[in-house]
Length: 474
Ligand code: ZN
Ligand code: MN
Image (cartoon, protein in one colour):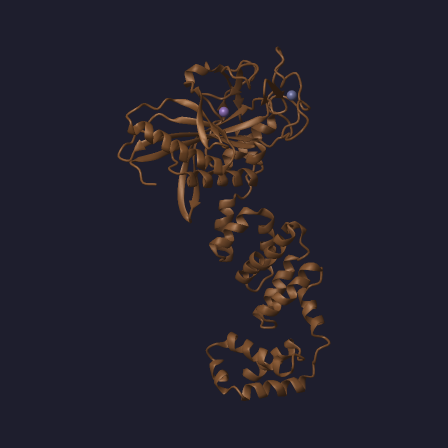
């Protein structure tokens, strides 16, 4: 869109930390679609006088997250009570971190349309989730299952200029959190949601105007729609020289409009003060060092290209799927042609798997089967076409491709002398092609194979035809 305004967006992402129990009690975390109020205790039901105890696993997971993201670690951090009156907080406060969060600024580099871009994260901190309210006509339902579940809040700088950047950033974040298993980050299951702060500024200006915050967005397409709407709404206000109110807005994804929900409180309104029930966090260097970060998707993407020389697009797909990547690497280790191995997995194997809706862990095709097929193709034992013909059988059974090829042509004509005569005849009647063989080796070779087999009325064993033609042509 052409406009005199530029979009300026920052995000506050809430990701549910993947732990066994909640942040401050031993109730089960990660409940979804379960009987309301089935995982609660006096602590997370906010009974007065109950003492919350910090979950060590949640601390480990957040440490792992900032190690993975290579950000500045605060070995000392503290918890604060954030007070606000809102129906999803029965005690009217949330335990969060204010001036000493667990981590400060880091940069996340991502690829957008194959171009490297970086976005800055301002901070990450730990906090508890609120409860869930479902509103009906005339009454509301309270579910405390989610109450006090561990969240990490990831706040970015105002670095985003369009919704594509937001989408790719959130997807990359999702991939990292999943790779290090600190959050499942499933937006549909409410495990990851973003407060989107949207404002505008004229292109020539550094400072951006007052923002509107749309809370709890949990779909990429809804974020895109909300940004489009807000851009238009705020442009109109600015065009008329009106002032944009700082407020929290609510996105109605049925009507595709945002509506004012409440005026946004300034930080001071939250009356932050140190949380008396939770002692500050003091992390020893030992504790931090002990946590090992597994290979991240972006590192995998770079390594696969360097190690195997595969195409960037292929590396991208493998980097996204841990098990598929393991499968590829196993197959590549025993393969004579890694590029063909990669493309065979991504084109043929995945196509069959998609039809059956199965994952790589469920397939009967072993990684060595793929390298066998590739080996037969590069040694000119079978053509790509024959490989495709036998693949359904490889796919459906546990039988190895070499065995299938042998079995298939076992009953066929293996009379070497007769086949040699046929091959000779084919070569003699095509002198021009024989001359071309010098330049177009593989293509011409397969033409001869095809002509010889045709000449034998489809009786000749292709493997023998192969051997004889190789001998005759050399
Ligand atoms: Zn509890
Ligand atoms: Mn928050």
